[in-house]
Amino acid sequence: MITIQPIVEYAGSILLLHESAAAVEESAAQLQLLGIQARKLLEQCVEQTSLTRTKLSKAAEALDHAGFVKVVESEACFDRSYTLSATLVGEEALLALEHLETTGVFVRQRKAR
Image (cartoon, rainbow, N blue to C red; front, side, top):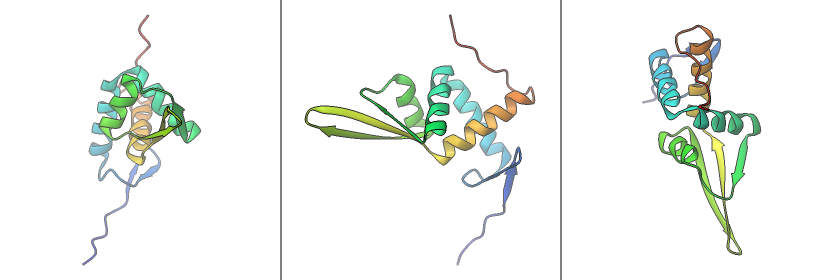
């Protein structure tokens, strides 16, 4: 038997992986806790579809562990590289975080000096 999930809209977008507004807001809070470096890296992954790095930063590892990006390791002729791609969960969390900041629910983080 196939179960059809109801359509969930959030901030003018249809959510595909989060089952409720509360779930996507929880993901947004988790993303915010990862810090500004992780958020900026996720934004770059979303904007550019994927990024390639020669080593993984702590922010990339944290995003991967949280499920916001997928990291694929490649090795060719002793050159190791990592390709980072945003997941749909990551894109939805970023959308929710931006919405919550715009509405004043969350305060946008600033880079530490």
